[in-house]
Image (cartoon, rainbow, N blue to C red; front, side, top):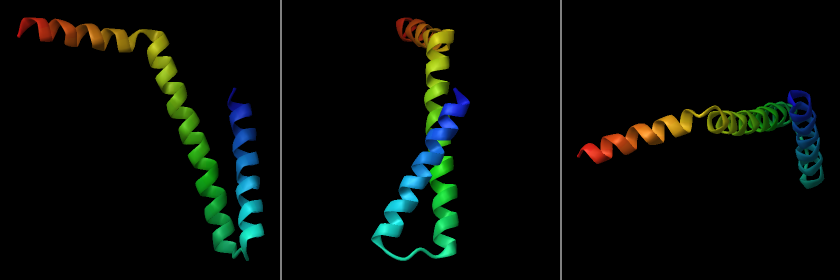
Length: 75
């Protein structure tokens, strides 16, 4: 799964660089910033989505929901 996410991130970097090259001149600083920004943004987004699915499947969300439900009933 991680390898697919990395491939998608690389493809997104390529698409972003292609678009920026098509729209105008690219400086070396712009290329480096685009590569780092797009690549790590895709990885971060995929990681956060994976964490939310893991949290839901492992039952942590249910535990928190049940704990707050008991606390609300006590008030």
